[in-house]
Image (cartoon, rainbow over all chains, first blue to last red):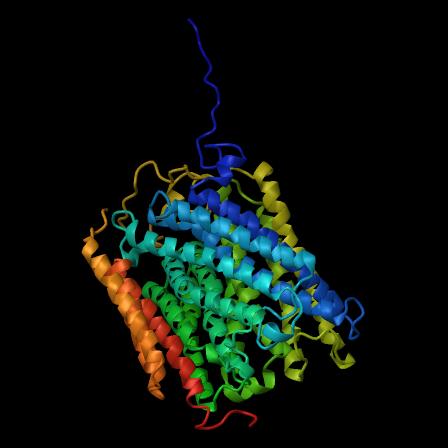
Length: 541
Length: 99
């Protein structure tokens, strides 16, 4: 009798279906494109982080002793541009959204796989422009490019930077377009609109902003470049323009852009809270619709960035009142998340630590936003460190906590491997503490009157700045930890299995890492999203 | 999914209309209508843009969902213009801070 031992063959996944650089660079698989984005945004995150480190070292002493004022201007400008346009805006949608939107709705891919790949290439081309600027001399206008400084006076690389941002905007538009069409057209049988996971609702709302808002920043930047290069008067009063028009157009996009960053993080938080509380979300439809409401209201409030410009008092009052509107859907979400946790069977795994951290930090960021929406209060606080602290609580405390929480939550699905849970818990706590130590003192600094964007300051502000710089060191260490153990887990992590968290959702019903075509057969949805009544508790941790 | 086939005649007709409207825009530029200069120019421009969107971009033949998406874009543009103008046109009402 002849016996043959069968060769051990690893199960086919999207990671081992093809090999070689070409299979990655020409892939149309949404999961591989998500990983291309993951690598790219991580690179820009650490580049932007280096700028932040230099800023915080400079501010450790009241004197300008590390860099000159011009260099400092370039540092905070590049920090803002890299972090906002090249990390925060694409982070969750282009990485986690790209990976998960088709999986969560039971589709094989996004509606336009080639456009998806194109969006990454556009992102890379925009990134090269910005890197060119970074390594050849930088730009000093601040990420806001306010005129007339940017059009007339700055002698740094404004136009090249503007082109980079103009280009990268199209990548964002294409991602949003892909998500909207996919969510409309490619849902699995039984996946009705009100059975969509809350992550999908958040991404739908985000996509609406990306499509409707991003063209405006593109046009605005184009006008800026035309005025700077060809002296066509759009914003220069001497040529019949209006510099406040630039601020209107800029913030028409850039305020909603904050919701491009925070809404996906809210979607991630909804998923994590329900999974680790073993409960259906409290008020599913309210959480879903509040995402849409934030996307719509977000477009009506931009004038609160112009309270100390020559915007009229009447418009200021209107924008102030409208700004308070955003607090309503934001508060609905926060109350509903906490109500979901109430009497839930909570397990404090790493994603849950990030989600709880998100709720706390987003709440502080949101409430301090109310201070800034108040017309009179804002006059005192404009361009102080209070504003810097406020928006970092939203963008770092909110968006990055959400991103990291999501990355930990879906890492087993993306790679098929578990990360080391205890190290990850340590990093989540270190990041939370480091973040607060960095940015809470800045609220006090701002209230006391320290302006942003200066590299020298009166000595009485030093104690808060030293606290902040110390916190930044802790925060930096916290960010390095996941970077290290995620790599470690690729080789040494335990196999995750298809559903390590016993989570609901179609993405957990396929293998980890998923097949190239996601599902063997198209799933049929028969229950509401986030149903936990018949599922066991979380086993890991 | 197949696209709607539009007779060539329609394209020629739209093209001709666009050319005529361009000629009218140029002609009107030589007539001083006072504050209506901008109104007339914008009205012609919007009419021309609508023709392009409806026929050249096939929105006229598209599904209601596509029409809704286009309408949303126009609505958002209106928000941008209206609220920007709410600043510009009211600077005389209560003044501007600091002046």
